[in-house]
Length: 564
Image 1 (tube, rainbow, N blue to C red):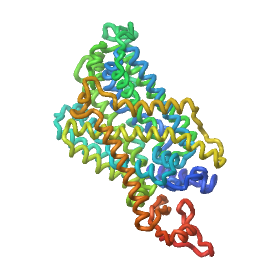
Image 2 (image 1 turned 30 degrees about the horizontal axis):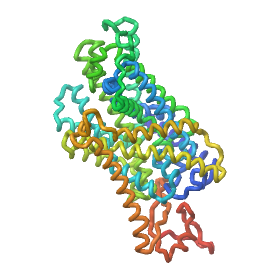
Image 3 (image 1 turned 90 degrees about the vertical axis):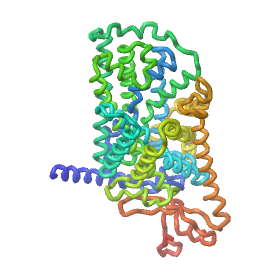
Image 4 (image 1 turned 45 degrees about the vertical axis):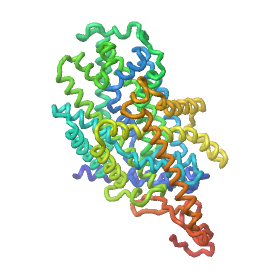
């Protein structure tokens, strides 16, 4: 107890010193707020503390990137491209894709180092007009689709396999709810310990993939019972397909395997020296994952015949362990390792998405902004965690297995891709706006060619889902029209637009009021916007007693203003 108490006092002292340093280095309003007066207020002193160090940044990204993909997707990728050589090339291309997108995040972070939530803040700053439109659309999408049911179910399945249990529908669902609840409780009770647990699971993932990679190199040297480990590498490009749909699908799967490189940007305001830390640690984490992915695939191809990998579906890593160790116990051990990987992936994802929801709430476009912004009672984002648990449990339990569940999971992806495209385009708008107000150079600036490349990737992942799969329009992973989730995703965004027009344009005109933002400061140090209705007859008085950011100021006669 005394050790924990001393550690807590030391952390508080470091947080206080850092808070004093940044508070004295620049007074508000800063360039983070200049030229864009809407959106969540900048919390220059993080109410959530500063528990995210360089190591945690690395493992938050690694833990989200390394889920189950590297253990299961190599077969699907090989099946799409047709050859071992092109399969390996695609993992390199995926790394380039992710690196280009990462550069966009790094430049945004250099402009807005005190804003967590990543896309929430960046879209807000890139598209200040129409006022509140992008924040409203992103917030509704983030809340409605804020569930991690697929990850929880994968975790439950591997836990049951590792324990020798029956993987019936309700066994899986019950264990998924239980495991997810445990993770949420950990996150609610302590940010520090949830991050430490994320780091520990990230380390296990690294050790697992390093072990697989080294085993592959040992096989290539001829020191294992695998008869011909070089067989798949002779004429490595033989069998390369010219089927456009197969190549495109494989490239999307590779690209998805790197998704998570941006996770640490969601907790940016909890990082000391955020720009310097992100510039070093974010590319490092992505590069480490790329190397491990690449050498793990080499290990698979050294151990397993090409045709077995092609038809392995989700069992590529299982085939590898059987080929190398030759017994069923190895598969059980692998299931345990994949379960650990899934647990860490779920934990790191929840940590990041809780900050996204909190930032949406702080913009004022969700009801009860104080609830979302508050860090009470455990100095953690309790409201976002509670929402995350509620929606995830519903999606785990309610939909029937099969089409309905697959559709709901797919539905999450398309609006996310739309916002990623808008964010990349918006970087040019932010640059122009900063230049117009004479803002100083940022700590990072991406090359234009890299941004254009990132845009090409964004367009690619938006267009690809509309291409019919082999077998026709009913040959997707659901029995109905393959692109239904794309249509519904766009419909959700359209509904957000209609709700925005009704809420912020039609009703104010009909009822004679104007929407204004008001900054509220909570007693835990958190700050949030609240959107309020100001009667047009009182608008001049309101504008005279509030600045453009929503802060209450003194009246013109010098008397204190009172917020209504």
